[in-house]
Length: 196
Image 1 (cartoon, rainbow, N blue to C red):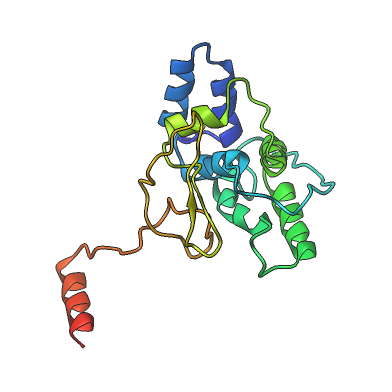
Image 2 (cartoon, rainbow, N blue to C red):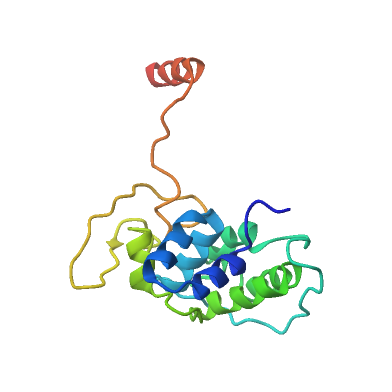
């Protein structure tokens, strides 16, 4: 039996939950990188996609037995944004088609909704996502210099996260600017390189 739920399974449980408290609990209990990427790219107002979902042949395999999963593939969503210029639009469409055909059909439908930035899940809103995962919807410009916090009720929040990932300049949540050494050996190596 699978330990982790697929992202569509988490969102189905979210949809079926009756109270807002239960919905928040479900999101928090099932917090994974893939879920956070999907929520961020679906609701962050500063992120725009420059691809449309192509026609694809959905997988007929049972859930969880496909070659890939949205959990793993969600980290590549930055490729499909208009700010990512290292790949042509045609190549972006090819990559998207490969992902859509390699994941489970329910994950492919969810990925389509993320790309369209229109997730059709009862009660799932940008305000709720920001409340459950503070700072997730903040946007860092591609140059990495300007930060636009998510504003829901007219109040600005300070960015609790620092740094920018190398692969996704809009996602300042995943990696801090400086990684602190963990072991004594790493500390010695760091001290030696700094002294040189």
